[in-house]
Image (cartoon, rainbow, N blue to C red):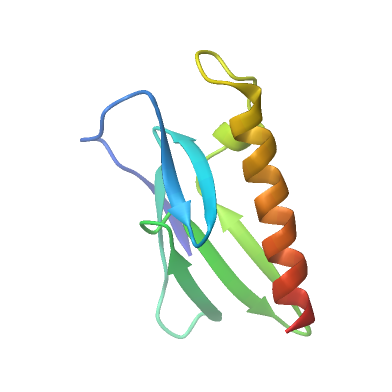
Length: 95
């Protein structure tokens, strides 16, 4: 998997849908998968990769805005995103 910088995008935070999770991003990268290199699928405009690794799994997010201190947005946006991510990961783990 490669993380690529996308040069022709507007700066500033926006929300990207990751399933039912509203994920804040700010100048996010894009993930690119390599053929024959693991079991992964891309989601959320190729900003999220979900990969099976051995008996476990990993979720890669190509942006850190969800963890950053909010500048112009409400902290509740990040809290809801983190809560949604944890709920989704727990649900996926059970399946």
